[in-house]
Image (cartoon, rainbow, N blue to C red; front, side, top):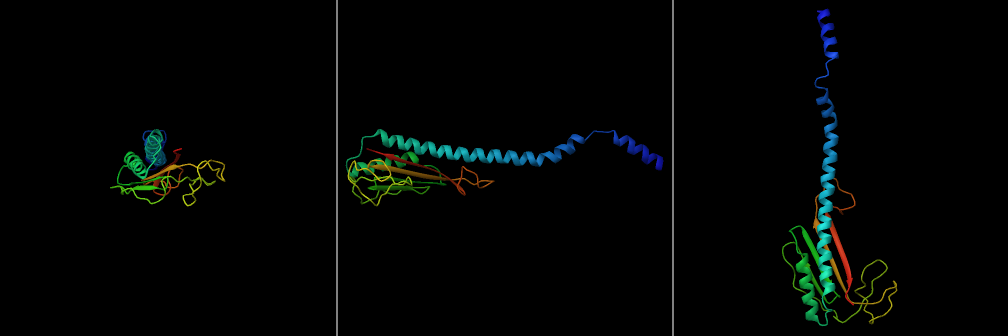
Length: 185
């Protein structure tokens, strides 16, 4: 029995069949995690770029049109810009045209244009990059941040994105977002 066991051990020691399967079993989990990460980052990047593309297109549309001169023209601009932003059920969007008109998309429908501010008002962008909607100024007034007062369109959109590995640069929690602030004049 002892001799037979020694012979069997010597025979198996030189046998390398099946070693690839063992090595694959050790490496496969790491490869699967890396593959899942690449797919996850790719889908987040796609969602972000798709959303940013729509925001950019809507902004370009707003800039190519003549500057609105009445409340009705502001409402028309807001509705058409929102039409370019509308997306899926996990998406939201908000368009504010010179604080005179606001339209929102909640994933299934958009609100009617609303707003009561003066369509002919002028505003400044603060040092934080936000429009100071609460502070109307005269046309061509120098702003504290260094710019000149103007009329603006603010576009903001979000899309849901559930991540396998949360916390990387493309998403904020379970959403990706895109934003544009455009000066009309």
